[in-house]
Image (cartoon, rainbow, N blue to C red; front, side):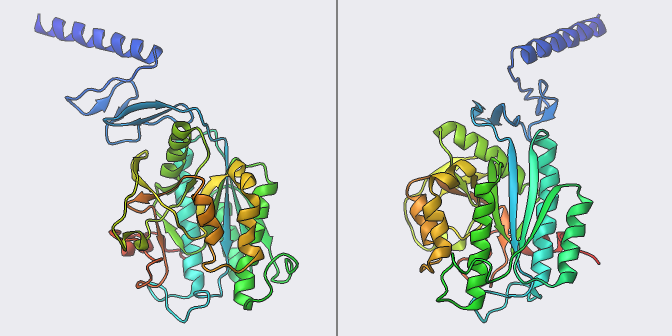
Length: 338
């Protein structure tokens, strides 16, 4: 009799789960920490791309801002160590090491994101200023191995001489030209989201996954576009000041008013503030990112806690590596052989 009751209970449970799925409800089994309607454990990602954001114990948020495509605009130069500085980066390696590990971490992160955003059109646009051919070929081979839509752009330093501030050093002109070109690529392309990323950011595997889910969630909540930065910069902790902390997908995010030039946003927002964005390259501001900060006074910009990417600057820089992060582990995980 006990076996019969158990079988009956199991049968009724299966029927109940099917009904919940049909009604688009989720149920939690607290006895074994699972979500039977999703066939997932509670510590797995519970959100459904383009449909709903689920963060326990806060519940479900309907997604009204679905992401349909992403262009990762990777700006790189394997020669210049640190712009306008006589300092060594953390780990003390040659610049190409940071470029290759940065790209490797992005490729790994794309693979994780593709598991959840199966419909998402993802592209990498690599914009190169003055890199050695051996590393350019290595970069092309790395991306080819992942079967990702890819475009390589070779940018000459004087190609944009009529657009960038000429009263700067050659290294500064190179960087400004690269930024200008990346913004132009975003403006003229057909991609929904744009991730402008420098070649000295090494990403956690779940970086893009978290950023995409969080973008959908926050944009749906505020009914507007926004900016996400992948790094939790140390300068944010230099002083006590009021801040806003918001719960993303699997990270806390804080509202910030300053970032460097690695950030994710939408083409729609880029076009809305085009003149301000592009002024970063037309005039050598102090700081260089000042136009971005002007935009952040009008649009939400957020960074994750803890960080989703390590900025490989000098270890003493307040704009450098994020606090409370296993830097060595992340560096070693993204070593590129050959």
